[in-house]
Length: 315
Image (tube, rainbow, N blue to C red; front, side, top):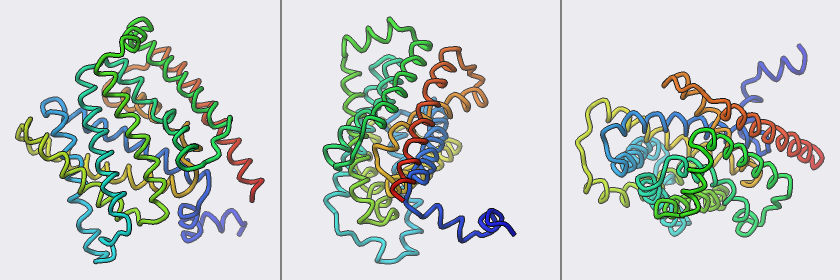
């Protein structure tokens, strides 16, 4: 049997690859984050036809909390113990604040502005990773992230028109302010997750985040309450479970490699969105969408090639 056959036939070796630290492992987990995020967006679209956005946000956190309780009980008291209660409280505030600002901004700003600012999170992550995590960001990571963002702008221009987009951003209305505040909070949350992931178990981090955000979101949800149907409850339950998977995969990615190294791959979410939009909602991608994807994909592959070569040299 060849070494390759032995590798493929050994579950222990295969499992060990996923548990190791490394750039490719980080990329694998962050791509899963993008995939599950898109599936959650689909669930939010299905349940958001009638339910208020703040109520959907609350149920996302609440069902995430409920689905974690059995796993916490299996682990016993050890799972509930934490040496960083202050950080957990801060993460819950950041998570709830980000979602609250985002929901408010979506109701005020044009869709083109929403789409643009949603994909600025990696750009905010880069300087934060340098200042707060002391990561060596490097011109290669910065360039790949900025080129990916150019691809995003190309797609947005093809969707809404350049003049409408620039006009909305130039006037910097209240919706834009809320959206930018949310993007900054999402980026800060990523940085805080990276700081904690080596000191806390992922399960403990998931549980306290879900519990804290559920508490913060309960009152706003009550104010706008609409009784969900059975089908909507099913969508919301899956949304909560998906939210846990997103954060778990994100923590695995941050444990594997630098936050700044993964920033360009957040744009892969756009590729999934285009695919699911076509398959599920018959949304045909425009020429500008394909052009933007043609800019994003090579930039991520280029940085992947660079990072894997650097990792091989260090090894």
